Image (cartoon, rainbow, N blue to C red; front, side):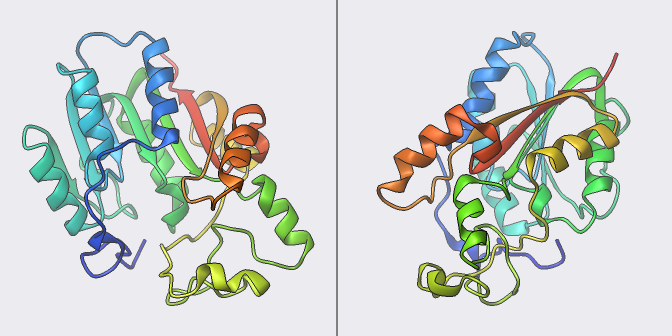
Length: 247
């Protein structure tokens, strides 16, 4: 991610987020089912304004929370929100500033699609995770149910970007929905097989997928998106992959 799409002048100008999105609620429900220990450490890759980690610290107050991000504007918000946690600005094209086997959990929400080198990103997540530790990553789904229809009608799939200045490029008759919208810096969009293969290639085992809705789905399609994402992860708007590092 060479350009900061979440600076104070771009998407980072939006208000600090406090409510979890559905994808994050799903993550927390599944973590609870894993029965995590009373103490541990979690690293959020691409922590943004710290919303996810703030909820983690409330749910597991004895855990140590760490966050890294490429945006200084977002990290400023995170530090204000969680002064007791550790945050660092990083370049995801380089190794992470942590030792091997440092964390019990590694999480990352909507980050991998922004990166030039996702393989390094996943290998670093694997390296800093303790043996037996868990990784949870979410990302948009190229094969979302509506994208399958859009391609048939000659429109660009939602989440795919062809310009760094105009998000409507390639959207055909749907350009009006993207009018005056800034790109968010998506470089590659995963589908279920690609995401699972990437996790396996990085060394993780037992990758399992769940689906989540896209909070920006317009009007009456919102509930349809919610239903499809619940019953059919392959056609969901967002993909959540759960995997682990062998002991």
